[in-house]
Image 1 (cartoon, helix red, strand yellow):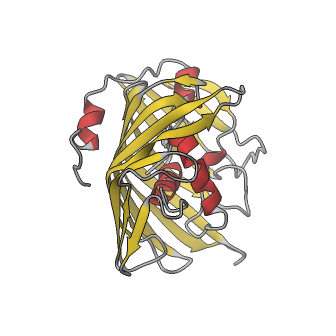
Image 2 (cartoon, rainbow, N blue to C red):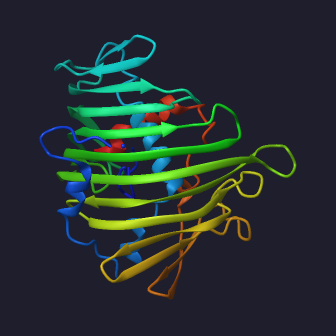
Length: 306
């Protein structure tokens, strides 16, 4: 989940102003409107659905959890604290800043995740073309998740983050600094499917994303339905509407009528059909009860955010 579209995130991962740079919302408002005049422009932001944002939140919630001893982690059963303190992890990255996870009643990962510059420098990244370099990131802000303790129910999440990225960017195979802001609120309602063999999740949400590189957009997801028994490669139905300036793009999920292994979505721009975009499997995002392999995704966080 790019935190975002080729964003961070990716995708990834909120309502606290922390750090010297101010709140994420103030960062977003300082950027001009993103270009949204062509299908290629839309492709940069195609993975900004509610399900995608939630998946990024899950990934960011695990930042630092996989490096034993660095950053340092303490836990009293209610609050978990992650602290960099200049330590160097097993991959040679140097950590700084801190984060606090205050647990809440509910399902796994329920609670408030508060970031105060948590991140690292000197991380090593490899690009698809064989190039490589070093980079880093720092996260400020808050992610809050209130999740049902059962396999069905209503789940809510809010995200208010600023992600500062420096050095090598594996998405462009070159060095590039960027500062990303994300402000988002969403819901996910899970019910049993008609056969009783699984759950159907309906996602809704809205917010803003902005970056120094791409500019800012607003996005609204309406009734994005994910049902693996109908289609396991893309969302079954629903839309995400992206606006910037006077332009409006609508991403339509159609897995229920056209389940494509290439994970396609329909795209319209200012009312004109733009055909399809492929590779949007992240529109399905990890399910709320999907935890197998999460540690492996955490290992990819550095590549996604830096």
